[in-house]
Length: 155
Image: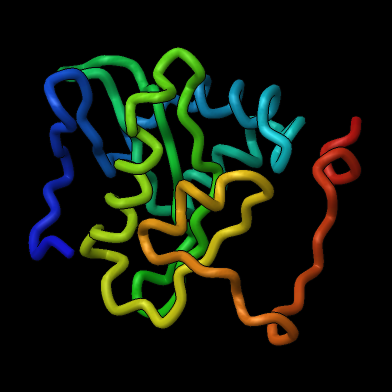
């Protein structure tokens, strides 16, 4: 792991990553999650706004002050535990390694060093996370209360 992580880092010549929550474009994140994700379909904008406010947010942007093209957030106490959530790359920018870069940036972020556990859930992106050290969780020790988004956010 890198010893130093800058709040804005370049990825080649076209993109940069930032952990500045003020830069997160809630319109882009809300549209993707509410319309295109399987895990947060229909999420109300106010719920998302509160989730973003309570998380460590990482966004990938086109260089300079360009638009948000990839996003992830980590729900964390910044001491012992983190939950990676809502990671996506907008379709027009897929296939350029941005998802891998985002996962690597999460693993290297200074606020997430020394955690006892960093977790996530995925139905279809195991190959994205496994190269950065994520493994299936130990069966039988985790419990959850899960409410499907279609029930939680139904009007």
